[in-house]
Amino acid sequence: MTQYDKVWKWLERDSRDLFTGAHSVHTPHGISKEIISYIAPQSEEVLVLYNVEFIISLINDFDYDPELITFVSDHLSKSKLVSRMGVKYIMSIDEYTKKNPVLLINPPYTNGEKDASEIYTQILDKVIDKTDPIAIGAVTPENLINGGQKKRTLRKKILENYNFKNVNFLDQARDWNKAIEIDTISWVATKSHSGVTTVRGRFLGEEYTTDMTANHLTELANGETQEIHDWLIGIQTDKKVPLRTSKKTSNVGSQVKISKTETDSCAIENGIEFDSDNDKWRVAFGYMRCNTCAIVPPTVSVPSKYRYVVFDCEADARKFRDFMISEPVRFIMKVTYTSRTLDAPQINYVPWIDLSSFNTVDDATLYAHWKTSQDAQDVIKSIVGSEVPF
Image (cartoon, rainbow, N blue to C red; front, side):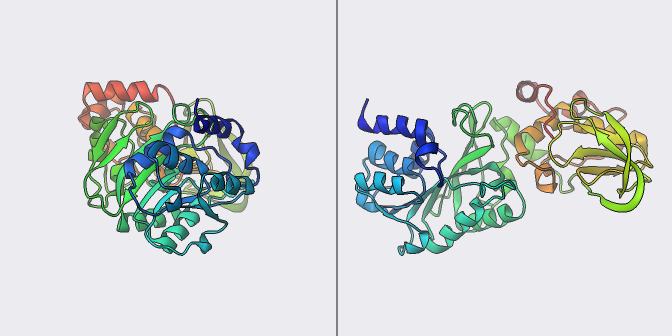
């Protein structure tokens, strides 16, 4: 075992204790090395934020000149470690004065507080604006490519200035050794890349390609295989599932409580009335994941902790319920729903189709409608099983 191998083991075992008070999540050797291999820097300046693992890999795996590396440190122990490797460090990105480096970063994702407000977008946004890197190798939450608000603004900036060379959907067990509990991606985007984007799926680990040159971010949806990816993109519709939210009134009334264990099961409780299209039939889902949905009859209100879709009659509501719990739609939700909450960005890959033309809505009907091959169906079934991932 080399000295660097010992350092990797040390960081994997003790980084959270070593770097308490800073960004202490250990970036595994395999992730760090793979990101750098996609960029293959030669003699460019390299800027590394917070993660000493990138530096160790640059020097040990790629024999990179330490004098070409600048490290933005957030902990004294990190500063001492990189200094021993001959790498200069600074304590703030504001101290960095060079332009057009290669940027390597696995930023802290949230503020670490109870509300877990995300902060990685502002960190990436600031360093991109300040340094104008020629290439970015990063690890971020998956919601960078399908989330709303700040994520949408950041990915627009990236797409306007860079082309994705690769995107890997990381698996919590395979890639992270179960050290992290959110869905993440590693990715490389460069100004010079003009070809297709190579994508690796999370569940099967298969690689396929997609064309991002037209700035179609939808193309980055995780399809797991080339065939399923092309199928998923091909069935997209301009109109999306019209989720609604409710508002509390000052009245007393009945409200629905959705079961968290049994699909399409709910209780009717007395409580505060909510303005939620109460004269209509609705299908409701938990805003925070509850892994079930339920049909809500008229006169019963839907609390604001849920999201719902409105229908004119019970038959239409039941068809939509069957649509949402069908195998293909549950698969789509499983591979694209990465947020803690259910809002438009997290359901945008579910096509909105006219269900009135179907007598019944089930797996076979939808697979036939979407011209899904048997091989694709078998893969979809193996991935989603009986899970209701919303």
